[in-house]
Length: 240
Image (cartoon, rainbow, N blue to C red; front, side, top):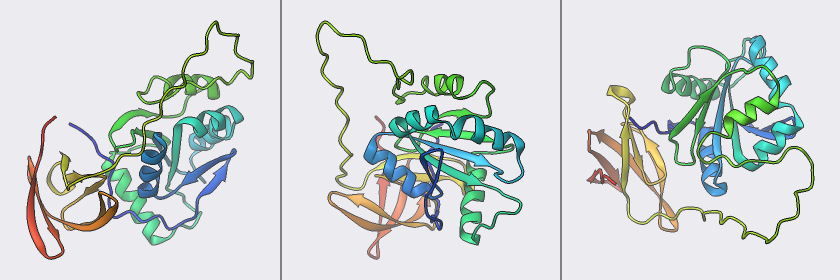
């Protein structure tokens, strides 16, 4: 079953933090938007930053290294999902982090969840011995990750220059389309264009060159009932 990144009423309430030369977001919405715009993978780091020794070792041995910074700047949008004992978090951030942990069934720290730019889970990892090299080699097996030369050596002369790979343009959206349904019961989510909504949630969904408010009323196995500007309509799931 497909797993979609929750557009779970998450509102990032803290400014981005920088560690090891890379940006760490706390807003899952902003991370997914950035990943879509830049064709990157979202890395969710479920951590106990001020008490979990393995989380602290992961940060010191891998995340704070220049090798990881160079790799992340090419491939990753980083999100810290923190569960500290002493560091203050706003009630909104605590609720957002708890909802993400529930969604991805987190039962230990550190846990890393990798999502493609559409919110599909494409990988899962944790602390690894050996520093950044084996960790980066593991991530390079994830679809959508690009190899980064971290040796610092100049490339060998090539017989003929190869054309640079084409980076996909950010997606454009036409009419409202139900792209997928995931989860069960109260955890069921509907992916509509660029947003995932649970029952009762309202989000701004991209349609052509604008965004419209869409409220999710009912989620079924192959359809969703939504409300737009006071009008109720049903979207059917279109299988590829």
